[in-house]
Length: 356
Image 1 (spheres, one colour):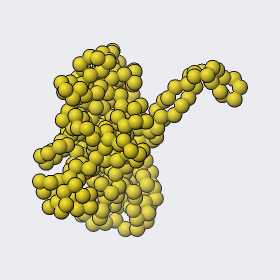
Image 2 (cartoon, one colour; image 1 turned 90 degrees about the vertical axis):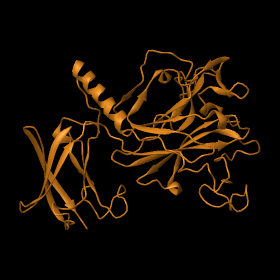
Image 3 (cartoon, one colour; image 1 turned 90 degrees about the horizontal axis):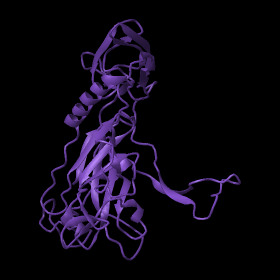
Image 4 (cartoon, helix red, strand yellow; image 1 turned 180 degrees about the horizontal axis):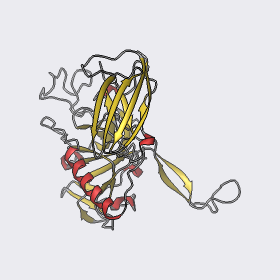
């Protein structure tokens, strides 16, 4: 899926409308129960752009550059923002923040750790923010008070591992031209797949002074907010307030944005073989992708009988779901179907195979 390209003033107008709509549909921050840690989390479709993209190693609150804060339409990309908690960071056992991703359903057992913002020894490169002065409760960067309370994480730009690379590779064996002429860069993995429902969670990392096994901080629920605590402080008898479903945002769906070329429209998966990885419990879906902003999808049997009409009107997402049901709400049978996509005076048609 590709970015929607327009020219000049029209591009600016579309971007303004898109940003307004994205802001309106952004996942709202979770409202956690009382007691630490309450961390508001937001998730938006697209890639966040601001000054921190220029010098990623500098404190986010200390750099005033030319880039205005905005969202860029980009496939397989979601921006997650969360609000730092000063009381939590003042704790002696605070080690940082951890960002998790969950697909299709907010299931903590399937949460994948994407990013650590850690103050633990050996992980300092992951912390690109100011540090808290516990005496004044101010955020400090190189001796100056700054305000970078909001952390911006772009999935997948901000994920991955730091790898050592040469600034200027030599001509022999790709080695650095001189000793010490190398830097650490962040190697990002692929982002979330377009069309999938995605949830993000933020937890607190434990300060670790004894071993490199960094993990979530254990905060026993001694007030019985979620369940009665057996032995206070015991992990196996007391619920952890710092769990992965407490500070959560979602669902959001990454998308490459609408396209104009109907020749790029696809039905995925094709053939459909009874289930797909994005299917939620009890549901089956085929996605029509690379759609323009306004379009109509007509689905027929090979005999020409109309099965279903799907109306697509979305300035942000480039896909439409079909739940494999006909106009009467009944599941369709296995077979070969024709789909016709109409947008204005243009149309495109192709085949779709359903195997139950």
